[in-house]
Length: 112
Length: 113
Image 1 (tube, each protein chain N blue to C red):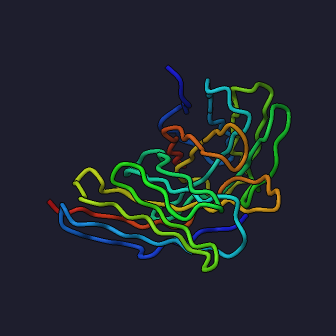
Image 2 (image 1 turned 90 degrees about the vertical axis):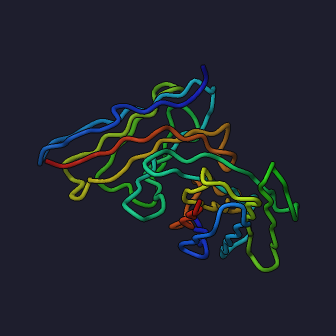
Image 3 (image 1 turned 120 degrees about the horizontal axis):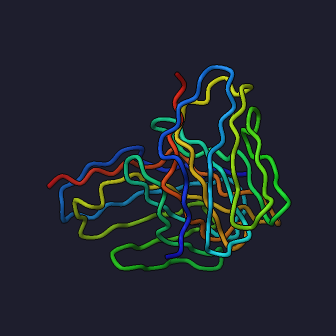
């Protein structure tokens, strides 16, 4: 069953804590993306990766970090430097950049 | 990255009516994509139209693209309650831009039964 998965569905973070959101795809896509969505807003690009072992900052990368050690995986770490992390986080992948993106179901991050 | 701007921000129509939403953007594009998002879910790709295309159909969806006006429209015909969702356009910048698509705030469509 091909697709893109994210886990967990809900994540709670304490002050000063780093948390990692998982994103996995078995679509054999080269490009992967992380977006942040705030209530009633559009998506803002955090990081993207065109190919394994490469990634680039998006529009709001501060306070976040990523890695792309495997083609199918693109985890996002929300660090303690991100002062307002409460949001809905969406991961996506595409065959290559600028082509159709396939989205995961999202992870909702809440701060305790 | 460039952002598409959807208009109107919200639209409420009766079931069976047609719904039209518009998208404007600022720079030259390779393609423009439309996505749908149901509340609390990920986005679902609807249709991609390339810069050399003027119109594209997919089921009850019709997308037009006017590159001279830097605008696109999405028409949903014979709307159904299940079409209630937010709709986003995502222009993909030309010139070899390697960044992701940038999404506007979307049009929130409500279909009244």
